[in-house]
View: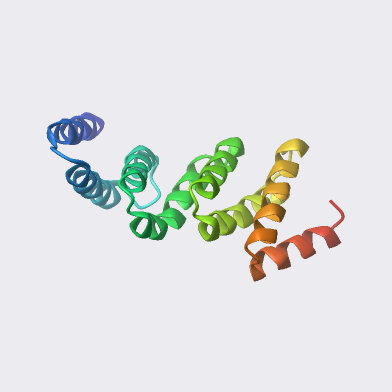
Length: 159
């Protein structure tokens, strides 16, 4: 019954978004939905992924870049905790952040991803190499102390 209530709540949110007259109103509705889901399911629940993604995409499309950046670390954490078994999605999320111009946030997320891949058994070498390359490239453009330490530490471990 509880899952039916959640599904009906999500349908209500979708209907509200469809009836919204502009992007800002849709963003407000999605933010309200995110807050409700956080309260009901927790900040890192899988139910957070889709509304968060749509909310951030909509803000970005509206040119509200300063409002997107503060939400990216929590959004990535939600992805990381829910997609640990499919790290390819995490790499795609990091690449998308970078392409959209959120370099600092992408760099921090990439550091987390590289370390996660390094510590995970059975990770495809190509995936690790891709994440490593992305981290190196971002570090060249946007030098970061954490990235420098991580790159140095992992080199010492002979990857």
